[in-house]
Image (cartoon, helix red, strand yellow):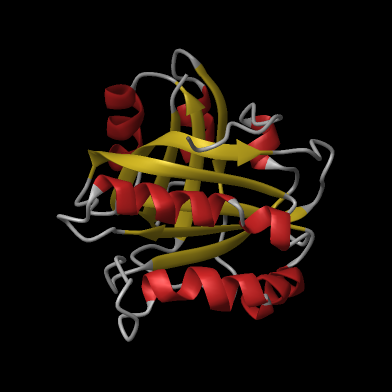
Length: 207
C-alpha cells in the first residue's frame, strides 16, 4: 500500500474528496492553512494512503496550482496512540548530500529513529525515504511526527538529544553534516492521528 505526501499550492476545495474516490485510496486529507513555523514551497499539505502512484499524482496536479508529490518508503515508525485527537502534525523534508556513503546514511537514519525514545512529546512518528511522483521533488527523506499541540514541539527543539546528536548532521559547522541546507518544514492541525489512520501501529525499526 502506497503512502503519499504532497506539498501543494491553492488546492481545489474538492481535492480530498476527489482523491478519496480513486481506486484503492483509503485516506485522503488536505491540511488546510499551515501553522506558524512552517516554511517551504506550498501553502497546504495532502496526506494520501493507497492507490496507484500515477493516478494519485496526476489527480493532485490537476487540482492544484502547483504540487510536489512523493511516495514514502517507511524505514521506521510507530503510532502507539491511535486515539490521539486532535493533534498537530509536523513534517520535515530534507536531502542527504549526494555521494554520502550508505553506511553513514544508515547511522544518521538510526539516530533520527531513536528520537522518540528521548523525546516523549513525540506521540507518533514515521521516518521515510521519498521517491518523486510529480513536480521537482529533490528531497531524499521525510521525518513526520505528531504532537498534542504546537507548543509541545518546543520540547523537541530543546532536547539535549536533538542538539547533541541530531543537529550536527544538519549544521555544516560540524564535520559530520550530511544534510543539504534546503529544507522544508510544515505544521498543520489534524482531527485525529493521520499516522495511526495510515496503519502505523507498531514499530518497524531501521536495520
